[in-house]
Image (cartoon, rainbow, N blue to C red; front, top):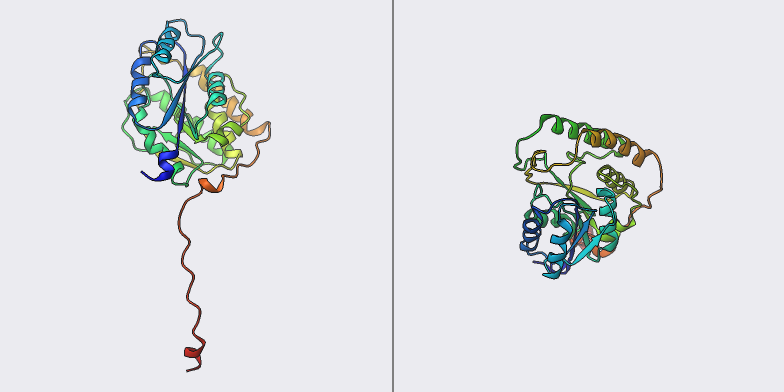
Length: 267
């Protein structure tokens, strides 16, 4: 591990809405990854006992910060609250439902740690193992990613991925406004507008069925089209991100060419 890797502290923002059944397992897997991290959970008005589980996890020291929203405001609002509270060097969003494996986080962190990237997306469709589920969901994801790419001029394979990781100063500088699942296309648009250096890393994916608690539906997909257009066409303006020198690659410059030997030329 390099000095830069040892010093990088990851802030994991976990929005929670009615995930009591998976919270202990999800947070235990996060802590088992072994990265220096803070875990920030944002309870978004859960009604299934999730808040009680989170309070117990906070008392046990499993999570480091608990933000309790007074009522359900949507994933975007919860993510924004977590970003504002984060104190680490890098911020990543982690769902509480075990669809995304925290053991992928070190791979996502690598391009940021070595100075190649300001933000990294974990792609479910770039070659990693994944559970076989809904055809229409996959087709919808492809359409939304295509539309987003057309608006941002990026070539992502999975715009809707939960695993979006970015340097904390960059993430905190983005003017985010979305309240619900539109946070995914808005984050993508704002990162593109900031001219961030974005990488994609293939990840595994264990999607859930609706019987298992999956919440996003076709209405959210239709709404995402509007969020893509709104975030890319309408304001607010996003300042161009300039990474600090410490975030750039530590590649040594090529040695200078030797000066011509004037004596040798005359001979």
